[in-house]
Image (cartoon, rainbow, N blue to C red; front, top):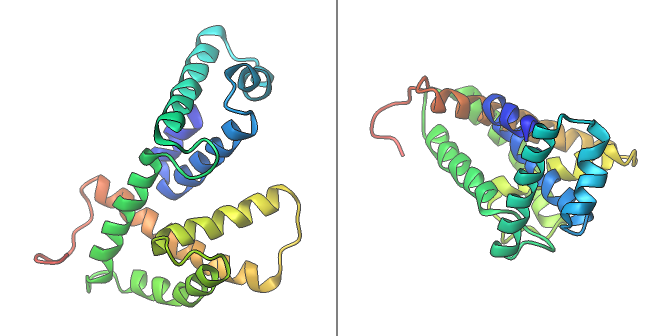
Length: 185
């Protein structure tokens, strides 16, 4: 919970990837608060009040997962909303002449996004979700110390640059510092 709050403030992309990991960890613990307490909370030896707060956060996430029907797979609506917000910002940025480096990063990553979408059967997903799927997959593979091909690393490096730039603009936008031309989408 504390990590998520810090990531949410600093980098929306890292926050979203972290929240996807939390969803998977909750599932790995069979959405059991006892298992979560043993495996995810107790090892940190938190003060009692902090442990209680963290367990309550996990309990709330579990309740949302049950309510939203994402106990086996999928993502919570709060996480989907971030993708929606980022997609809207992406559209504004793409149509702006004030951010040529963003456009360049996006178009450089686009062939890799399309390739990943085709290989992962992600045609039904929004483009941005495919980007996060690719980054999450590589992140999980690295954590599992699994080998990654050179092409995969190259592709995710370009996608990562694009998503990092989008995250920076999201932070600027959230702080009211992003100024794009009037009349843009």
